[in-house]
Image (cartoon, rainbow, N blue to C red; front, top):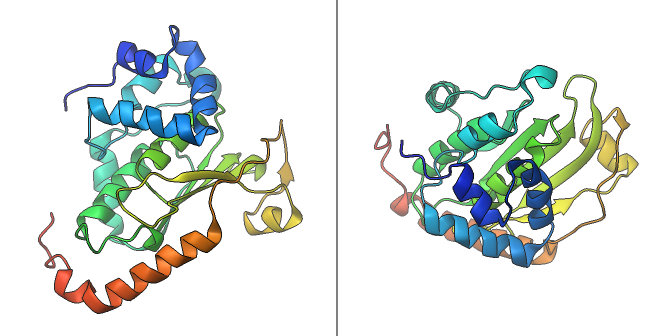
Length: 242
């Protein structure tokens, strides 16, 4: 696989000169929808192949916390085998050590290949990603949002359930060509219970809501009606994707 997102390219696209600045810069971009989508466009000018994690090699070389958190990412080939073995292409996918999203992206891509562009509905697929590393979270959010995925990003310890914050990444128009919004769930008892948080820890993220739920429901309802009418004749033939 041709490597297009090397250190120099990523740093240039993000407008920085040192790799250590990337996590903070990415988080600034993630919280600014206008800037975020402009940067997405710049990345897509370099490559439109969204089937794999663009940051896999970059993060391992420049950001991985191998000593403190034993971070080494799953090779793309192993991710593909794992996801093929699960065999499920709708519903919720759970990844308790998501990193920058390599396994999740591979699963999303395989889910996409089971549908046609006219029958793939983002609302039918939710990816629940948990990750401990402060450095990895900005990369993960960027990766999910640029692909228009619907996802939960749970930032904390998957074992103790101590959590710094919960993000909801949501495709606002339920359109496979759209980018996703990034929202932060409130630090409430309801959030704590639903997302199985034992305790809030660390610095809290600021309040941040982008998605208009009424608009989202309107788009989902339209897609449900469309698929009910046209889903079968427009479906991809069974077994056509290997």
